[in-house]
Amino acid sequence: MSGYKVIGTLGAIVMTIGVFMPARVNGFGGYVSYFTDQRNPTLMLIALGVVAVALLYSGQFGRMLLVSLIIIVGINWLFVNRGPGMLGLERSFVQITDEITQIDAVRQVTGLLRIREAWYVMLLGGSLLLIASMLAPKER
Image: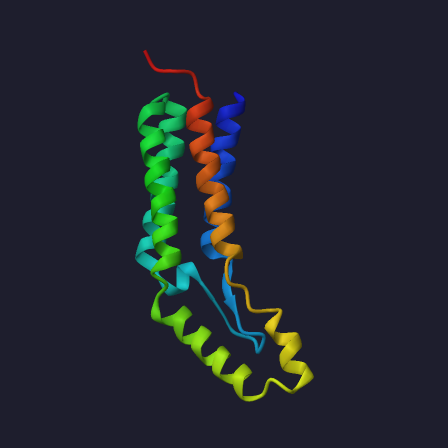
């Protein structure tokens, strides 16, 4: 298997993992992933990842480049337009920490609030898809 195909397949897998990994953890046992917060856009991202891999294996690298760019734009849109589940969890967590910041346990919990890790993983996957489309042999 060619190197660019491995990179593209890995990119789609990494992006899908990012969709499902916890994006917000409040330290009290709750978390929200991009999938639970915004199901339809994340399903579209997964479908676009499948389309990109299909284009990769069918040799349509120009179209794959376009789909990869759409995926990266979609990932950034998901991060900027977080849904009410994530925003509500963020607001409640900030309110709690503002009220009881003197307690040592709260300081430990603040380290568990993940803001961007899932977004970074999805962006890495989308970037790998983009790189694979750029490494692929040129269409004639």
